[in-house]
Length: 155
Image (cartoon, rainbow, N blue to C red; front, side, top):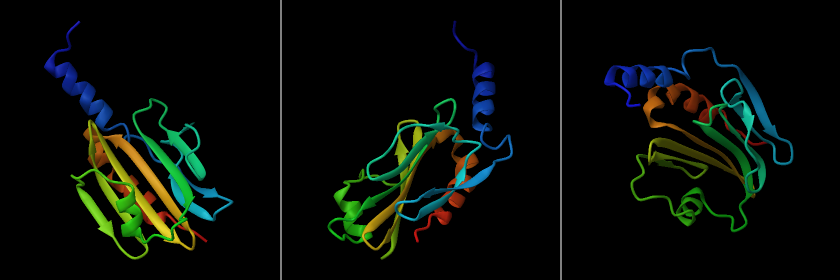
């Protein structure tokens, strides 16, 4: 069965507002082994989705449309944020890139998703938050991603 344009527009509007339609419940997610902590929208990312490299946890939305990874990894080579990012070989068309002596934040599009990565550098660890969400919902995610990003801490 083929969807009509009005039906597709209605479905798009419903999915685009899914993040902003309900109040967001926040909690602090912490990695005890590393002191990494971040404000975490637990009412959005409700499903555990495995463990990343190093320490931490992956979560996703119940419908799988978005995911978040909170992790800390050893900075074995004691790389600066710029050097660490370069070793990851990010795609050439990054839409947003900010690199300082203490962190980097990068974001772009991959297919129908937006990806956002922020990593803070403290001691011999790199503390990161990696978020993927639908590009069609980008504006609905802006405040959520900003709060997550700005709350990333290490002890």
